[in-house]
Image (cartoon, rainbow, N blue to C red; front, top):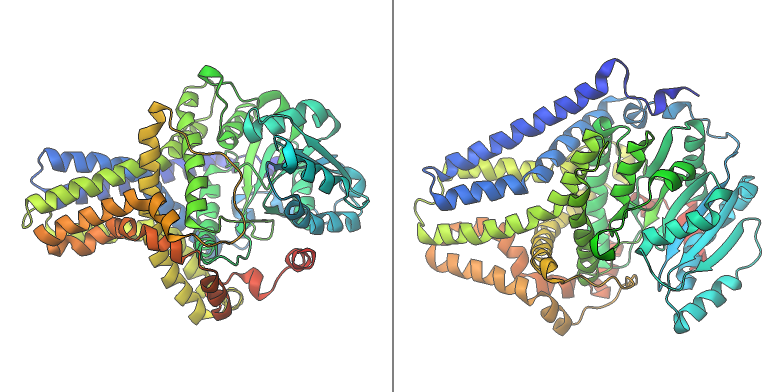
Length: 572
């Protein structure tokens, strides 16, 4: 097999791609800041503070815009979009025999074992029929502490019916190192027996064909260290999860294709639905212990940059049939998960000066930090613009430049979704998969409103956590509630009253001092002010059922369910 799969494009084209993206991001950022300065001119101390905060908040938006533009161009113009961003993938033989010993790792903690078994069953059945069963071994890696939950878990996995796929259940007595510690324990105990590990979360659903595809790609290229599959949302009953994953589906494809075009062999690792080459992972990806004996929480990106430092490629395979995940069913559960990621990413600053990292790896760590540092910047922008608009209603912002700035920023913010919408509308088969053009556009409109309400709530929650972290405040790392359930009004009020109060305060001040600014303030303050009703309403069971009946938020897997989802329904 040719080395082209993980080598950079010939003739230094990869360096040119990265230089082009850096230049585009730099020019777009400078242009937005220039528009901001023109809108606020003449500048005073408040205006300069706003521009600095805007600069902190911009990187993800601007990079997302260019990733989406590049992704759309690749999806529309390339004969094979996947091969365009993953050279050599087309040479992988679909039916090549599996020769590498493969461990399938399922990491669980305080999960319903029946649910885990249900998610695994279609994959086990498919692998048993594939002829590759002798090369496969499933490991259930449990971090459940003990008590009745552990007893039920052990009984459930002991009662698994015999299969041609070997299954090993192992439970640790503690949760040292969290999930990364769980996998490291596997590596030290069982890792020498296998060549490849396919890592799954408790909520992962991966078809047998996807497992085999990942392994065949790893077989074809011995210098490929991590292969990350694109993960899409599992069709959901919850209204919150249904709308969220519809939007995620819109944004992920164009963004991932575009980023893969320039990241190439410095791609992402998301910690699940991915294949790892065990020998270099064991040798080079051990996570360092942080001061005070603390563990690295968001381990995946650190492991990716360590693998790349060791000379192995890390790539993403942007195909949408490689596996599913369950998204949180309510706003409260979503924020719990989001805050865990926020806390973990804030540890990355300790690795920025690690020796021998590639420049792209350092950029990825910086971007992972800025993903969450942008949140307090946006909250400060809300406060300062409220003060500025209330202090000088007639002269705070020049209307023409301000409107140009807002239009440019919103276009960039929504660009990943706009790119995928354009691609779907141009493909009749995709339109049908999403329920038809009319339903699809209605779903896009509803998800747009939903995301405008959701994102400021995330920003506020990140900000509150970041303010607590220096004083020892940390989010809970307990088990995720995965089933759809109601959110009582009292619970939502206790959880989201600070967001609500902040949003109402901003809108109230502007209603008195500068009513003309209210439509613009609603872009941030509106989501904060409606956090409580959003949490309650988006969790109503009848709303989820109604959206499903109307075909709103429909995914192609609902229109034509693949075999793994039909089997999942049977096992459920």
